[in-house]
Image (cartoon, rainbow, N blue to C red; front, top):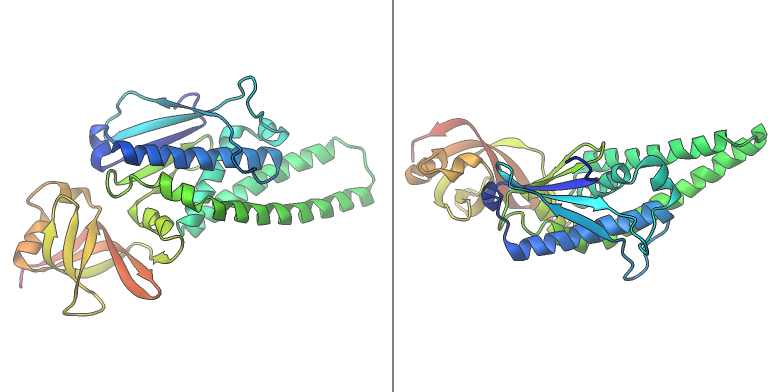
Length: 302
């Protein structure tokens, strides 16, 4: 990723063979372009983007890497394009935009811990730069306190604008996660100095549901398997909260790709599997089961 400000790595599914469904990839890149461009304008100019305003981005398609497809994003300052503002010039555009993109996907995807970390990182970068500017000025102590008060008030307004912009970017985020599920298993954001963020199917579905879907943390659960559909990686399982009813479960475990496996054997025997899963609830009702890994128990009794 030498020289790139942000790398989007599509993994699993079609990406294992360095493929991504073309229409899904197009939607994804358009979504990323909107998020990154709006982030550049917001962070650089300290304002919300105007309707139709864009910062021009350059992407590089790399040679195939084992098990993934990568897109590199470069932030440019070509003649006639929107320049980067003073803040991004000081702290580094790649790092700031990486935190911003992480914030958007984590916030809209219900990943509160990752979202808070990204927000703190952006606030810390702004605070450090502001302190450096104040330190270079010869001002009295009372003026320094007044400057600090004004800064805190300004930051409160900045956070309000950030939340408003994030809400407006929900459709762009939906576009960006378009390949996850139908074509690829997940994508990873690798940014300059920012921790990588993995956006998997549960996170993508929360983004697509615009906050209406609540997904639990990974947890063990016993599921009685009644059948499977291999091409779309689904199991038919007994509803864990309503015995006698059945629902589909998405299988994200790579073990499911090869047949036979523990899942297909459980389906053939109508037996119970203990799995590691994330559960998706809408209005308090269980709507989604995402099986991420196989647990430690297989009952062969029907």
